[in-house]
Image (cartoon, rainbow, N blue to C red):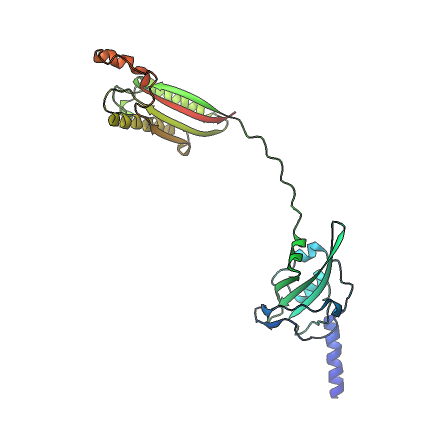
Length: 279
């Protein structure tokens, strides 16, 4: 009776493992943790392989092997293990694989270690650089496209046409100046690819350098705000004041009466808009 029981168990084992050679074998790797990580990975000697010639695996099938696959799924992807390893109670499977590349054959050993529930959890190659054989070929990068031509659009607005003398705020804008800014904004909105817009304020030399710097900055900021109001994206626009540091007219007769001096220095009082637009 007992002999019949053992015979029945052997039949069940052989059905369960199909072509696998045994219902369990000792583990070569040492101290495999419940989550499927060994303290030391040990590969069997190649000459101990049951399938001594090994196989040429399908690389796409190998790439599908990942943590969580079952033994049945692994068997379907890679076939039976190539060493004396069974099915039930076994925590590691070993394979002997060959890869053909550039006219040469490379032989590698591949190990899968299972967790306590017999799901694949960790994977090892010998030599380790065999893992590189599974990397997908990288297509050559396309040649860099020619950079788009970017040309600046320049606008120079007379500060006297924009603001009352010595003023810089929105309420100080003259109607003609507001209309000119609206026209420029319309051109920038219609541009194919507007990259950035720089607004720069300039003054003459009348008054202190510090006051002129502040005046030029306020004028640039006011023009920037108007461009935004007209629909030009705020993230593209910067505003900067350069005071009296970049004059158009180098000098005027300082002894001239104030009205004449103001008139002479008029070209220096300006707001410049430079826009970078793809052509």
